[in-house]
Image (cartoon, rainbow, N blue to C red; front, side):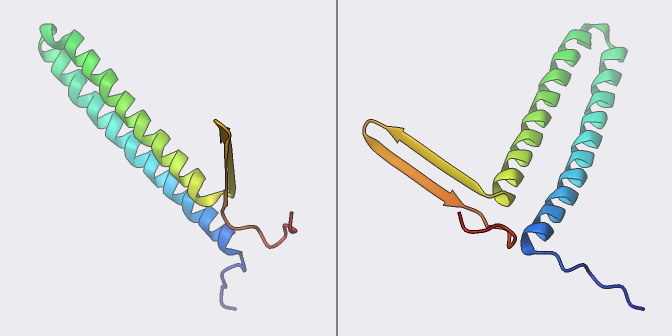
Length: 108
């Protein structure tokens, strides 16, 4: 018996691809963070004068990685999920709706 792919909707496939991409991306960024920590810690141990600057550099690099991870997660969430934005200011009104509806969802 040959294996077949499940009959998922496009929304389900996008969700699965996003999940896998998120896991792989988090693994890569974690490995990069470990690598940076090892380099900076080794530099700080060799010279005591570099200990505080090394710690500051370590903090900045990890803050940068956290910003990248947050941006990736936000963009995946916006790309996959159905979204609706409404805004009202100074007498003007704006409404935007996007994303695919799941076939099981009825018209709203």
